[in-house]
Length: 522
Image (cartoon, rainbow, N blue to C red; front, side, top):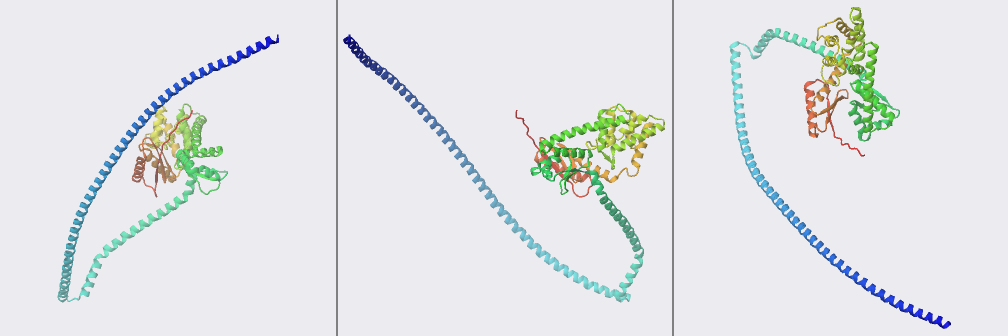
């Protein structure tokens, strides 16, 4: 039994050894085959790589040839250009030499002519001196002959002649004296009037500043720096949008806003107050607040106009006219508030019409609208009568209103009791003591004319007269005018102001051209 087991184990061992050698042989054969395949593939890859390398070298050589060709062409062009410039310089040098020779020749000729003229002048001078000496000698001989013939010396004849001239000229001298006395009196009166006018205008300056300047309170003087902004960006944006002159000086806790336009100044004051409350003072926020305040003011003037119409029991007035009635609060005429004047006229006209048997409500309506054109005179050119009549016709107002607008200035005949009442009320309101001041109205007229002259030019978007009328800032459309045209526009406006207006001192014309590019990231 043991022998069988040992025999079986030996056979199994031999079989395993034989199987191992056979398996190893097969594995070696398979490895050799795979190795041959890998070598073949590697050879193919090497061949393809050599082909690609050859193509790359060929392409690089072609690019190098083209680059060399372009380089050579560029050198040839540069050489030709340099040669042309050298030739041009040589021509200019040649022309300059010819010009130099010609100028030297001309100078030599002129010098020769000058020498000849000097010689002739010297000869003429000597000849004139001889003639003068001859004249004096003959004059002395003539005087001696006259003295011997008249029996008088030269001094006696001179005194006699002067006495006769004095007698003949006495009347003429007295006339001249009276003439100069009269001129002296007139000149003295004119100078006295001038001194009075100067004193009056200086005395009125404080009052005018109160009427034309608003003060904005600041909690901290550091806010002045924020209002000015980096490199003055904030204050430039404020002045451009608001149309007022912003004065930042040493006044503690305050800045001043100066403008003749009351409506514009009120908007500017409210805008800056809201910016100070908000704290974010920068150009984009300034534009946003300004638009918001403008819309609020438009709503408020409309509400005020509606309230006035309700208080007077006047119905059927168009909303646009009501809005303009509210805007009269920000308009002055001869120093008198236009809305206060309008309400006075309306109430007086109503009382007068009622006493005379007319229509009280219609008279109030005509009185309320008789100066409606003044609400537009800051924005549009033209007479407030023409503007008001145009508005009344556009909104189909009553014929009494259409008659009262021109009639209260004597431009049309009075056609009704109500119109007569409006004219009487207007005269009463304007004539009461202290109601109006001519100086302020003249000033407002002058600054309005400055803005109108600038606004009528092509390409102008907005024009603001600031700094008490000593400067006008003109904002132009950047798409219509370039920088050179802007400079020319400033000169044209300055010349037209010089030719059409009388003004003290200088008026500075500043043309502002701004180009903006806006895009949104989404």
